[in-house]
Image (tube, rainbow, N blue to C red; front, side, top):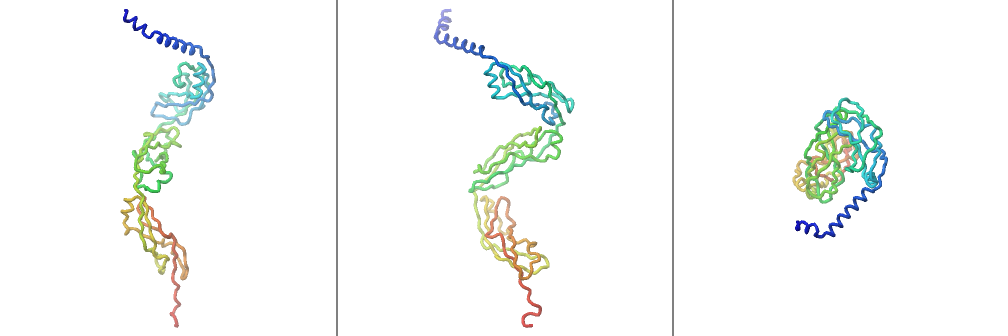
Length: 324
C-alpha cells in the first residue's frame, strides 16, 4: 500500500495540472456553441454492387440540400472539406427506380458530433443499364519532343497492352481501344518505365481495370550519318521518253538512335522522283518535282540537301535531221 501511495504522489503537481487541463478542454468542448446550417448542392454518388448492372446516367437530381446540426467549429470545417451523399445499390430490380434517401448515407468525414437533420429532396430517380465488359487495346499519345541529344530507339512497350472496360452496354458498343494520359517526351532523358492512367474521358459510368498502364521507353544517343553523291532516280512513266533531273545526285543525312542509324542498309535506300509527277512532260518543258526517300527504317529520319529537282525532257529533233 505504501508503494502504491508513493507512485500516486510522485510528481503529483504535474499529474494534477494534466487533470486540470483535461477537464478544461472537456468543458470548452461541451460549451462550444451549437449551430444549424444548410448545405446546398451536395453531390450524390451511387455505388452499384450488382455486377450485372451499371448506371446509365447520373442520378436525378444529382445534388441534394442537407440540414446539419452540431458544434459550430465542426460545421465550419465540414463546409471547407465538403460532404457527399453516397447511395449503395446492393441489387437492381428494374432499369428505372425511385430510391428514398437515407440520412445515414451522408458522408460527414467521420465527424460523429455532426448530425443530419433533414435531406431534401427525399427521393432520387436512378436509371440503370446492363453492364458489359470488353477487353480493348491501349494506346499512348506522345506529347512534345525528346531532348536534342537523345532519340527513341523502339516503339513504346505497354504492360498490359489491353485493359478491361466495364460499363453501360450502349457506350461499350464499338469501343475497341482506349488512350492513356499523354506522355510528355520533354521530361525523358533516359530509358525507363512510366505509369500512366487510362484516360476515361467519354467513358462516364465505366470502370477500367487496371486503371493505369506501365509504358517502357528505350532511348539512345542521337547520332547522324551522312552520305554524299546519292543518285536521284527519275523513271519516266511507261511509254514516255526518258527524262533528266537536276541535280542528279544529293547529300542524304540520317538521324536517329545510334544502333538503328548504324544498322541502316544503304543498298535499301532509294532517292527518286515519283513517276506520276513526270507524266506528260513536254519536250523542252522544265518542271519542278518533289524528291522522296524510300527504305528508311522507322524511328530514323532522313534529310536531303534538296527536296525538289528540275525535270526536263529534251527537244524532239526535226524530222529528217539537220540539212535534210
